[in-house]
Image (cartoon, rainbow, N blue to C red; front, side, top):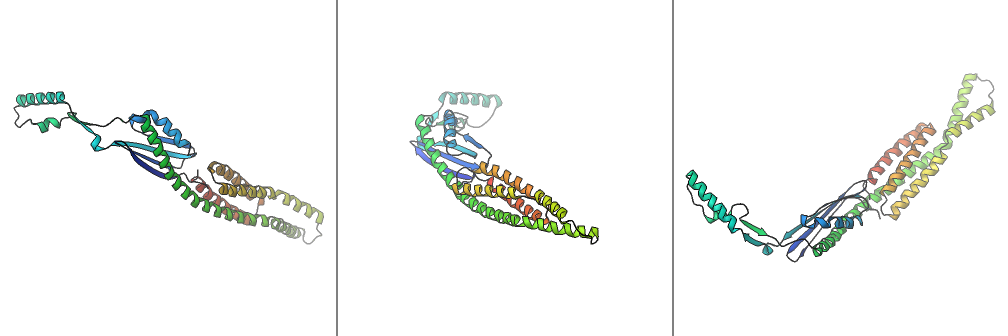
Amino acid sequence: MIASMTGYGKAEASLGELMVTVDIRSVNHRFCEVAARVPKSLAGFEPRFRQRIQRRVTRGRVEMMVTIGADHRSKHLVIDADLARQYHSELVALKRDLGLSGEIDVGLVASAREVVTFVEPPTESEELADHVETLIDRALDGVDAMRRAEGEAIARDLAQRLDHILESLETVDRRAPVIVQEYAARLQNRVKTLTKGLELDAGRLAQEVALQAERCDYTEEVTRLRSHLAQCRQMLKNGGAVGRPFDFLLQEINREVNTIGSKAGDAEVAMIVVTLKSELEKFREQVQNIE
């Protein structure tokens, strides 16, 4: 089964007095790139978290955010009495010097910066890091589910496009002998017109037709294209991380299609080649979405 590179997952659970949340989202990217945002207290564990993600994601940009919040009941109120006395002393002096009115009460002093603070329990520990890793796995399960679901839809679309490409290729293949026959007929009529009814050299005409048949022969390109398309279909069936192999095969397929167009020298084949290239471009756009 193939997977897209777009997905989202979230997991959260409490550890004692702490509520830990992990959000992971992934988007298209040529390589595997992991961007992690973790609290400062867990900065030392960030490489470990990245490696855990990279073991399960082979392609795409993955953004992970870890947030940690303490239960309000676990927070401890701390009053800095010395700082409060300094604020009060300075405010009394300011009131006297400026001749201000009004009361300097406890509410005014308590509202001053850092007089009253809440202290949360410490968050840095090996146990907490293990807990985060468990949540990373759960969030990645959600990411994987979305990527697989979208990957199935993309696989169906790619399979249909492969059918269309193969149908066009068969038309091009059937056209090959007709191109030579039509060239032979045009050449014979032209020579007759130019020689005004004189006897034609059948051997010379046959030689010229043979040369043209060799110049416009695209049998090898058709054979290679069939092989490439069969490989594409097999990769869809096998699944896995097939985005990069698809990129390579599409380059080869485009090369063969261009060669057929230049060799054939035929209007009908040229129109089919345009259709093929349009279908291949849509195919390539879809491939950019898969892992």
